[in-house]
Image (cartoon, rainbow over all chains, first blue to last red; front, side, top):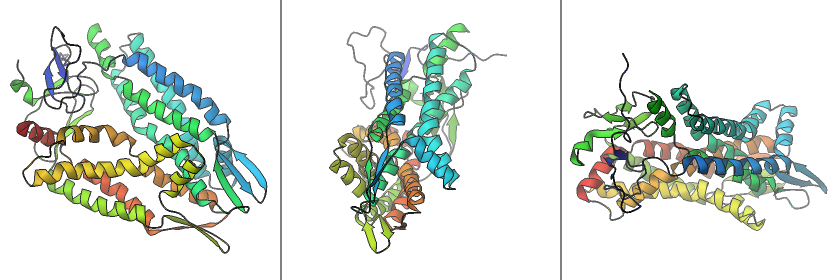
Length: 211
Length: 205
């Protein structure tokens, strides 16, 4: 026995993104903008240009991911010796110095999570574009995962912020932020915006159409 | 089907499936029958609990920004910092985007969250309503993902380990307040009964 599921869109309704109020979607949209009768925010049955916007933000993030990993995150000056560290060299330092747990945390937050976010979003975008009906529930889980873990990539940005505030001992030792921090922050912000602009309801629209 | 009749209906935000929601007991959550995502969660004593946690949060916030945060001890040299020192350094190095980002995500947005909660819930307690409650409550929903104190806290831990060979890091009172604030702010936000807030704001608008 298969239950007939009805989405708000197929019932001619629209759900407000801010206050969740369900209201009627005007059939003839005479004026371009429809607003929520309760909270006044702009209503869309689906996020506007969701796929294009997500692709654009995702590509921008992927481009910045390269300098973020190649360029130095921190530049340490200790007794005249200058040392530049990238994300990966920081991870390797932790692995060698015995605190491999911290090394893993940084590796997961800074290298693995952004990469995983790229892969998941590309997979979700392609699955919607090629009208896949496979495992919609699992794809929603993947989407929720990217939304939840994406922000943890900010970790390395904060570590650098704290390090440069603490280590200011003049000629003895000083840490400055490297150019990669900025690119890395762009990656995090852009992937967060990309995940936000993707509309998970598109996954189910395909499933409904096919059934 | 008109607006009044739809009051008890809610669409899932992840899959757009329409649900009929019966009156919910306190502290219950409703999940989407198709994709399993959380639709909403009802709360008990939402107003009192949100207010209590928000006020506690505000006190902790002022401790966190005004007291010494971390200190680094290396031999005879002691380097004191506050929560804002890192942002100040980023400004000095002219990385303005980054300085603003850190300032927003760890200092300004958490304060904005606390103040918005108080702005909405204090009048609720007095059976009144703030003039800009609707836009403020909408804003509160949007800034949640960008308030990242817990990640900053993990950053502190990593920094301490990283500098362990070079110097001793002494956590100050502000770090403790900051760490507690993470929990308190989360308790305040999760005590908010969104359904109740919107019902109230709608009724009195």
